[in-house]
Length: 243
Image (cartoon, rainbow, N blue to C red; front, side):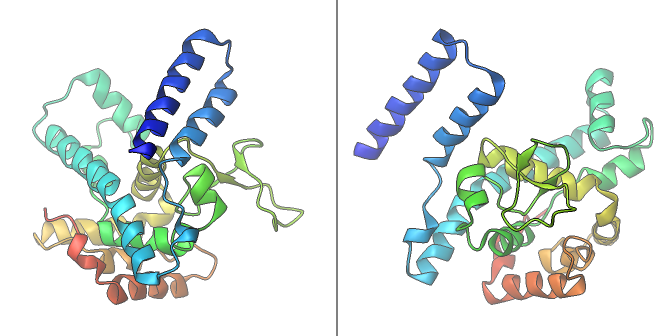
């Protein structure tokens, strides 16, 4: 009950500040991020490995399912032509597809198996214990390349310019990660594997799509094998979306 009261108080404080203070956009981001980080479990304090893993899955899975359901609904709208032209144009732009190329758009507007997302999140964030996960909701090692767009890594090479992307909430992090997988040219192989599964009316699994992640990290195919190992060891395929 104490935690509920604290969260209600913090929400009220945020609302008060938004409507009574000349707060800047970046300041609001910091406040919003801090508020949402209070809802993030402190995985470093969970010493039992199995309990930590379960807490990690329970924290991420609802948002993963929510984002996949949004994609399923959008796919249906695209396939049935039940979407207005203005929104359709925005979707083409969002997924970086030439307007009118519905086949390519449908290749990109598709689900990402929960097992794959959970395994990558676990690996990239050290089971939620990285500072980027806790304070910036970046569970997936996502980078950005404009100065000030994120957080500069402590051990970044002097010649490097990338930053670790920061997000004000978990939903924005998961949504961006999934959109990146669905539109980035580096993951074209993953999307081809998924389309092949669609064409054969086969179940789309994280184990299969992981084969298209060779370009996600500098270690190449070793990354694919690591992600697949995490999926198998933790029996994550049970969480994959049945569609």
